[in-house]
Structures are given as C-alpha cells and as structure tokens.
Image (cartoon, rainbow, N blue to C red; front, side):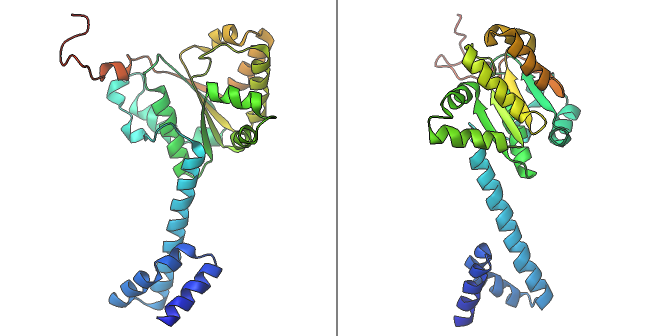
Length: 254
C-alpha cells in the first residue's frame, strides 16, 4: 500500500494526475488479467492521455459559452430540407475551418440557424479547435467596454484567439457609427486568422441599412465574403411547428 502511495505521489510530480487518482484500480485490473509489463505501461499512458483529452474538451466547451449543447446528430434534416445530408457531412469534416472559410446561415427565426452553428462548434471542439460563441448584442457590449472592464477585455481576447468565432443574430439591431467601426476592426483582426459563422435573418445586401455607413459595410463584406459559403435555411420555424399549447390540440385561431 505504501508503494502505491509513493507511486501516486511520483505520478503527481510527473503530472500524471488523473492516473494517480485511479492507480489502485488500474493495478488491480492488471493483476486480474495477468498483463505484461509492456501492456500495463501502455494502459497507464493511454488512460492518462484519454483523461487529459476529455479534460481539454470540457475546458474548451466552457470556453465556448454555447447557449446550449446540441450536436449535429440532433439536427433534424427532415425538418430542414434546404440542407442535404451530403452538405451537412461536408460541413462536419471542417476542412473549411482549415481553409479559413466563413459560413453565413440565413433564415427566419426558429429555422435552426443557431442549432446548426452550435453543432458545428461542438464538432470543431471535438477535433481540437478553439471555439467561442457570442450573440451580436453581447459582442457589441464587449466591444464598447473592452477598454473599460477586465471582463470585456478578457472576453475580446478569447474571441481574437479562437479558431472559430460564432456570432449569432448578426444585424438583429441597428448599430451607431462607433459600434459599426468597432465591429469592422474586429472582423479585420479575424480576417485570415479565424473562421467565422454568422447567423442572420437578413441577407448581406441588407446589412448596410443597419450598419448605417456604406464604406464600413463594404469593408466588412469584402473580408467576410472573400471566402464564404452562404446557407439558406428557408423552412418554417421549428419552434413554431413543435410548440406546445395550453389549448391542447385546438388551434389558437379557432
């Protein structure tokens, strides 16, 4: 027992922290299965590697600040006929992230834009990428207060360090001149460095109305649309089709 404790302390010193916690169980299993020394060492190092990878994924999930955790497997293609299974698989392999492509997901509220964006973000995390999710409202707030609060400064640092930045509800509200200028500088910082997923219910040609400055709009679009795939999710709202009602089976209109 003393030897096991000594081993655990040595493993902690070598930063085999997860293995140190479960060393008695690992040794017991090795004895029961008459494992060779080589297989035992392989099991120990494999266990530590797997636990470290799990921990890294959990940390990246916290870092991403998704509004919910929904995978691509949960995305119902039958409810969204504007996207084929082949197209979804092409998005899932994430070669577009390596190529620094952007995605613009367009559609009415409830069409599945945010679910698809989060699902792709979770897939990217599982493949080792740094991902961060923000709504447009929160992003504007953080941009405006970056030089004022530590929280906003730290948040913007994470956004600029991410491999994939998801901005939800882009152009949901109009920006003033200062906000549009700050947003441009962020897009410029991310250009040729990170991939961006934008969700919006307004097409790029309408963004100028909300940005209010044609020159800034042109500069933003120039960088976003340089390498981009635009996906139209044009089905009816999933939330409306699957909503519950206090009236049972009766229609509200009756």
